[in-house]
Length: 299
Image (cartoon, rainbow, N blue to C red; front, side):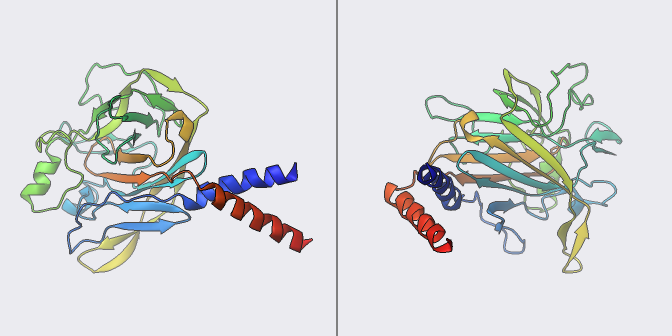
């Protein structure tokens, strides 16, 4: 019996340590920090530092920033981590509709079967899209969707065939381009004058409970000051969570993509990964035998 338990543990261990993500990286501008970084088994895709509200105006006017999105694969879960600077309750700030609107964190969008975070669901292509509510909310962007009643979503729950709201800062990408700022990912609909980033869940076909979870932590982020050419600490909130792989059909050797943006849609970050292949039987037995031998030696 102990041998079977040890083997099962080894199987889970091999899946965890062989999980590797293929970063979704465009060609980074030579003058911008970017790329990927690794922490505790997570692989993060960093957002461009100049692709943020902070860099195009006074921090008190446009304090909307997403720094990175990352993932870690275990044998039964997809775990995620997002670093951004809006508290869970949001803040008051400007957008295309109002000089003082409530700006709140968005929800997490997951694409399974493609590395494109904006890929449309397609049964023939094996592409599906899911969302995890990062906060409990209904229609919190009345300035853009006046009079619309959204079904309330619950923090940490998984939503199938979710309909998404888009950003409220409509001319943001056009503004960035006009001022020679590099912007990525580009608007999925190709219209630079209308913000089409996926932000909040505004409808869904099915709610799944108990198969996913979310945690919020205040955790300062070290940001880059281009003028001073130095790093400084900035207020930030780290959103971590998980979803059962079986709940979203995330099997072996499968591409997936994560996307996160705040309700304003100013700044978004995407990450792509690929789940590991099925481990070779020989590798499983080798690891299991090694761990059993080590246990005997400790005795």
